Amino acid sequence: MNLSTTAAVITGGASGLGEATARHFAENGAQVTILDRDAERGPQIATKIGGHFAQTDVTDEVSVSAAIAQAMDKMGRITAAVNCAGIAIGAKTVGKDGPHPLDAFQRTIDINLVGSFNVSRLAAAEMAKNDPEPDGARGVIINTASIAAFDGQKGQAAYAASKGGVVGMTLPMARDLASTGIRVMAIAPGIFMTPMLAGLPEEVQQQLAADVPNPARLGDPREYGRLAGFIVEMGYLNGEVIRIDGALRMR
Image 1 (cartoon, rainbow, N blue to C red):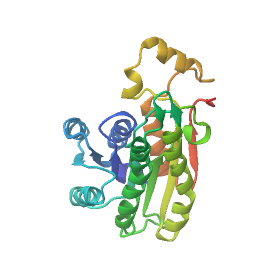
Image 2 (image 1 turned 30 degrees about the horizontal axis):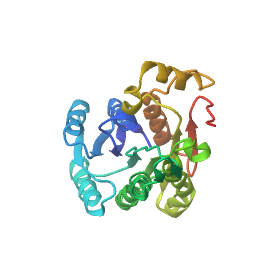
Image 3 (image 1 turned 180 degrees about the horizontal axis):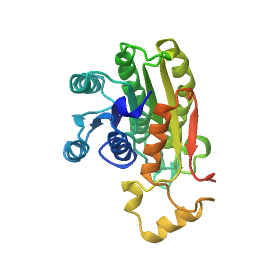
């Protein structure tokens, strides 16, 4: 697959890793439809990159079905889906205020894991209708995990569980979709300079960056976007999780 002929849906594309991916794809000739809840910033980013926007709640089947239909109407087909929509919360299993709020745990799982699967399955149904390329390829799905899936820190039970689920479903989804020519990959970012981290004090940012072995800095969302673009074009990558973290291992 070539990025220049890709038609992609990107969740969370109004900010952070998703925005960087949407920009990178569009800059390299891809058609892009941003799926995001932000009805203000989402259309602005879509207009800037020459793409499309569909207001979407990734946890809702009707909302995602409508967004996929809108993307099909605007682009004519879908050959890539990149799931960047997600949230991160901090709460211990038992903290000073009592046990971990169950609704917060459930919401994290619903958005990060269920939402990723919801978009993936519906996008894959459309990809399966594509005419195959000479090598049989019809599409690629890229989900966002995290290094927290492997070495989550205290207070990350919900987040690590949701991202561990993303890691766990990568291989079986790739096997499920192999006969249709659809690949499934996951990216596990380390600590990236997303809007959430950008709001932290400078000294906190520097402390986080100092923990990264090499290069000793926070990740640039554009690096995530470039890796996603590489995955689209590298057809032999399938069923795997790629860490992009500067060799960081959290403890």
